[in-house]
Amino acid sequence: MKRVVVTGLGIVSPLGNGIKRNWDSIKSHKSGLAKLGEGYDKIPSKVAGLVPVGSNEGEFNINDFMSSSEQRRNGLFISYAVSAATEAVKMANLDSIEDRERIGTCIASGIGGLPEICSTSNVFEKQKEEYGSKRISPFFIPSVLTNLAPGYVAIKFGCKGPNYGASSACASAANSIADSAMLIKEGHADIMIAGGAEAAICPLGVGGFAALRALSTSFNDRPEVASRPFDAGHDGFVIGEGAGVLVLESLDSALARNATIYGELLSYGMTCDASHITTPDGKQSERAMSFAIKMAGLNPEDIGYVNAHATSTPVGDKCEIGSIKSVFGDHVYSDKFALSSTKSYTGHLLGAAGGIESIYTILSLMNQHIPATLNVENPIEEISGINFVPKCQDHSFKYAISNSFGFGGTNTSLLFGAYSADKKS
Amino acid sequence: MDNQEIQNQVFAIISEKLDKKVSEISEKLNKNVSEISLMNDLGADSLDSVELVMGLEEKFDISIEDEKVEELKTIGDIVSYISANITTKG
Image (cartoon, rainbow over all chains, first blue to last red; front, top):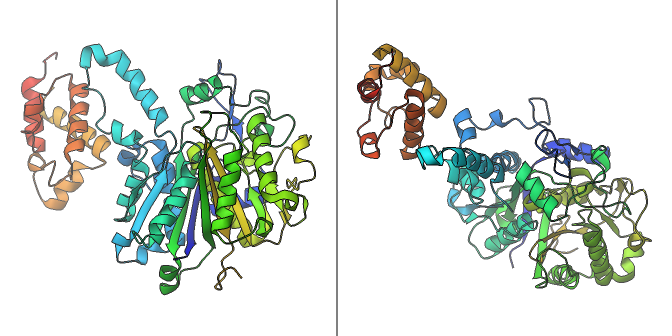
């Protein structure tokens, strides 16, 4: 069976633009959450993980990679995908590859261009009596379609292999990463640009999640502590935006072109609760992790770190801890095991979450250093005895799991390892 | 509105919608501006043309039928169409 390794990483998140800025923020326990501005007065959640925009180092500057006419024609989530892909492609040195038919793109979005749908709809409703469809931009549909994120990235970088995004709500990026590895193993491509992008922060997007009672509402004046997985005060997730993109590559291809290898994607597990659209069940998230561990030929005790899905909702956090305890048994209480949620820094990036969290997981493996779970002042009973990483810490480990679960009961676990030339040393 | 004024406004819309400076392209190709082709010289595809027409309709308060759009191949075509169809309000 072909091995799939990671040869590039790219990220734009509430912590900033670029791998360095993100990892520096993680290490310094810096929250990326802020107050929402105008337009949210009557919406109970007024905090979000917004991408910092500007022309300083580490800030997102769309002018760096899109002309002004391109910007008007693309949804914000597509811009984030292009930004993250640009960094990942550069890191993997993909420009030097001649055969572009062996490079594919699988970048998902959970929601697509919601802010652009809203703004177009608002104008359309006012003008439709007089103008009909005449004033709808021809670029409206292509700017909001979820698959135009991978589509646009492919155009930018000339990637002629498979092209789509696997949309599965908050597990979208994780599913796209798993699909990408399968495409490489099946021989459809040697290299896949994989991950997720999301930009759904607009009054209707925030209002919609608020209507589901899914968002944090108690910390509107202290956004930096609003996302607090595993803390007794957790009261809902904080919506975030951005993109996380990995370059996945067959080991043979990476070795043949002397690419730097940052980690290995060993396996994945994908299951569905088949029980409720929003309430998780637990049994199947457990099976997703177990399946991934089994497929990698490992034992639960081999996993040193789990980057949890934990979004800071009381039901979800507890359910995931329960699944983890079932999978790992007493190993969860040992000093060889650690569990943290980087959503405490970034909020929940929905369809991009699995992308940025895979990156944080790989960076953890590379640096043998794990991100904290911020804001746990009063740990919930369920986490007691488990190292939830109150402060970033050094940790010696070879294998890690990144969990992503989504509405619809979908569960995806990705199993990453530090790269070693000898298989499963 | 005279033709020069119409032309200047058309240039502004092209610059906004297509990110292209007509005067620079005309100089580069050594071509009279009225002969500049939207598709061949400015690289406009079918979607660009639709957006351009929307901009023209809004700016000049006119309506351009789809069949007409296909006939507007150069800057000259656009300027003469607008000057012939614009309502003269002084």
